[in-house]
Amino acid sequence: MKKIITYGTFDMFHQGHYNILKRAKDYGDYLIVGVTGENYDIGRGKLSVHDTLATRIENVKNTGLVDEIIVEEYLGQKIGDIIKYDIDSFVIGDDWVGKFDHLSRYCNMVYLERTKGISSTKLREETFEKYDIGIITDEIDDNELVKEAKLVNGFEVKNVYCDSEKTLNGFQEKYNIENVFDDYGKMIEASDIVFVRCSIEKRFNYIRQALESGKHVIYDSPATFKSSELEELLDLSKEKNVILMENIKMVHIYVFNQLLWMTQGGLIGDILSFNCSISKNDESRSNLFYDLSALSLLPMLKIMGQNYEKADFKVTKDGEEIEFASMNFVYPNGRAVINVGNVVRVDNQLEIIGTKGTIRMRGNWWRSKNFSLHKPGEIDAELYNTNFEGNGFKYLIKAMSTMLKNNSIDSMGVFEDESLKIVEILEQVKKTDDNTL
Image (cartoon, rainbow, N blue to C red; front, side, top):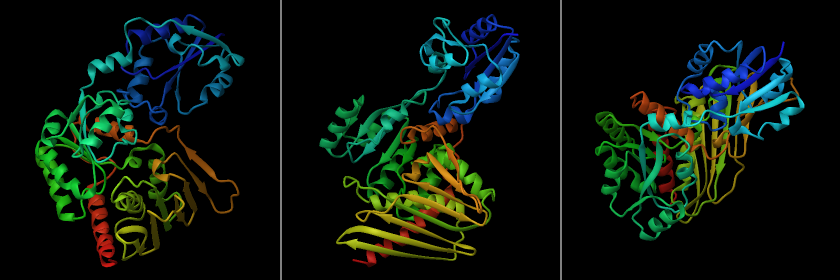
């Protein structure tokens, strides 16, 4: 019996998919189809998939052409599948010519001409609604958000506003943004989504103005140093039935959610200690310290909870500039320590110690590419990773896309009580900061 295998996402199943499967079937007696899993698609940055995995599998099954369906869950799985199922030929569309030639050592490679004039990409472009993003910024560097937004169907950064003409023109020239505005109100009118990424002192008013105009808003966290002001923004977003989302990308990344599942599900036992350190060197950003602090506080609140018994803050300054701060939280059964370096450099790392194991993330842990699990009595650590590229903004936009599709304004990733708690803590830190003057 001659066995054939092929792979694909098979999103928005169409005649081209059917034709590939039919022709693949003609090459042998038994056809196996690998349908890409959702986590694999997300991990490799394929964020425009419309149908669920269950729907895509059902559509392939309903062709009546397939003898067996498997799920492709990780990079490099194909070689193992070819060996496991004793495959004679691997059949794939000719848009992949040359990409799988290395598999010819294991089986015969066949590249089939695709059906002209039809593709899932084209169908998505015709199906998905379009959302123009407008940015209010204080700096020329976009941190890859213009490029990453385009990776999700229907989203594109088209508008930019800045109260500095030099920065505005520099941003437009660097990223070839379609429209530049020196009037914030006009930029709001031209945008479906407003991204507020300016200094903290300006964020509240810019966010409020966009929400009052009925626009969805993404904002760098924290939005403000006052809990009452954040509550006002949250209430206004509900009143206007629009999305208000924090730009904390890690909560939308698969590996970070794996980490939360392991800690919240008790897989490393009772949590005894949470230790987090972060620092960046970016002189162009004002109040960078507070942005980094918000980024560090969120995983602590998700993993340790909000019911700490005591908190103290130590702020070290050089003139007006915060060089370093240490935040210490005492919980009923453990402790959390967050160290944030601005001028003072600290090693970026995240460590969670439980009674049954320890999780460690090194380097830029907020991008959540991988972590290691160390269990008592075991020499080798278990590694968890994903095929993650970019800075993660595309995952946040994908989450917003899902909310818009489902007509939901509920925050995904960062919950309202967590946002409020972060602002409450930073309000206390700022008082400590002010008292050091």
